[in-house]
Image (cartoon, rainbow, N blue to C red; front, side, top):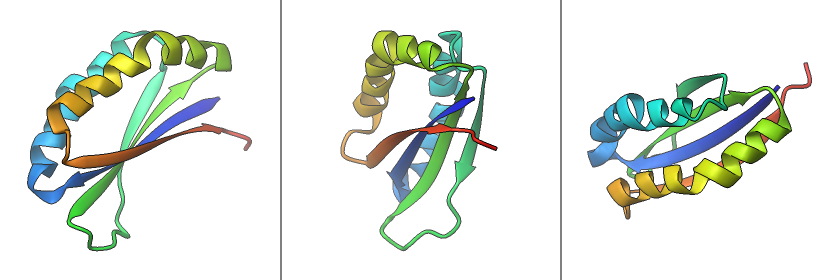
Length: 101
């Protein structure tokens, strides 16, 4: 199983709106692509005071092939939607992880 992890640090003044929009709009749009099989939303508790709050959005994929189709066909538009709404109020970094347990 693969995990596509996207870590966002959002400005504290935008946190409530960001989390609401991500839960009710963005994550459903990601899941509607049909490629992630499930997801988790996690909040970082060991935050350094930097004026932001950090969340991790984890999407679970069955195969690298499914992730690659998702990445090539959907990911740019999904990222653009976040950027359009929160430009200048967040930073993010993605990572792809493999479960080896």
